[in-house]
Image 1 (cartoon, helix red, strand yellow):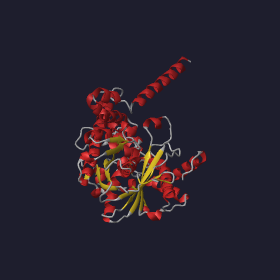
Image 2 (cartoon, chains in turn brown, yellow; image 1 turned 30 degrees about the vertical axis):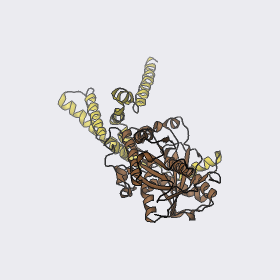
Image 3 (spheres, one colour; image 1 turned 180 degrees about the horizontal axis):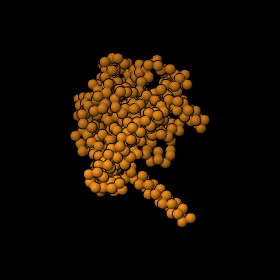
Image 4 (cartoon, one colour; image 1 turned 30 degrees about the horizontal axis):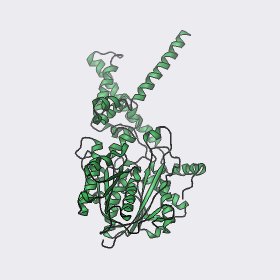
Length: 338
Length: 152
């Protein structure tokens, strides 16, 4: 049975992440992982006339690069799972118009990277697609203007805020080939522990991440020892500390194996990164750029990536609602031909 | 698994609060005093300048002074400098008239992509609007109170 325990999918055919691509903006390019991304755009507008068009372009670039790397035609993609942070997921929708492949749009906030990858793996595993593409994007300026203030507004942000990553990541899942294998995915429940401040995303999302990862261990019977790295999406420095403490309460000690993409992507000394990165592209670019390269080099054999999403809207927040959060994780295993 | 329920939520809030760094209030106040004071000092110079060289008096010199400050703040917003100053200075650059100019200009720049009518025109007051509304309401209440006091 492909359903393992309560919330985990086991992919018996072990679909392959045939190729992946990560495209980022200037600030991410200047960060510690800058050299590992496939493309670092110097211009935050990416040669477009609006921020929204820029984000869309990044989405398209990531998809096209992933397909190119795999050496298949764009028309061979059987399904694209994609999403982003903007209202009506316009980046994904409009990029899908350009790509012209069968498309299913998703919204899972910053958890979309692993949500889309889990679905792509499931689709390929079940035989509904030979090639399934999973992609997601975010842009600092589109997120700022939708969720917070105009980009040039001089309001002061507290040290607990996070910096939305500009970029896009795409992964192409196939039945066979060489590349990391996708073995499991654990679909998270929506967890809301009552955090209301939109400047405290890490603390809001940490319980969801801990819930999903703990469930993953329970469903699969695995322990932290089975993984070389357990990475969360964008808890950043504060959320990461809280999650570590929550894990300890559950009797799980992760130690140095426990990392966070929001911490990895920026240098704390970079201007205005606050407690770390966030956004759909944070987990997507770090996973598809940095982590997959480390797996290919043989530094990592088995990793668990848990993308975390804060499911708030400016409206729900202004009406005083707390922030519901969700986290989904996917287990990657180093393939044979790698 | 994460425990749910009211008690668990309260316990979690306490845990989270321990990790969330407090805003550095003392440093923020000092920075705000420095930057806010400097902006006001520039205003004072401008004021004196208009009185000395352009024949304004103390009452009328306020208008050109404010106009120059607004112009400078809008220019700095357009050049992408004011938001960085704002992150450092906090209330120091938000409270004076320059902060208001920045709120208007940044919204206008941001929404230019939606056109001049619905974008710039419709969204310009998005951030600054509440200030105007409550400024007028407060002025009305104060004026009413003053009027009532003088009658009595």
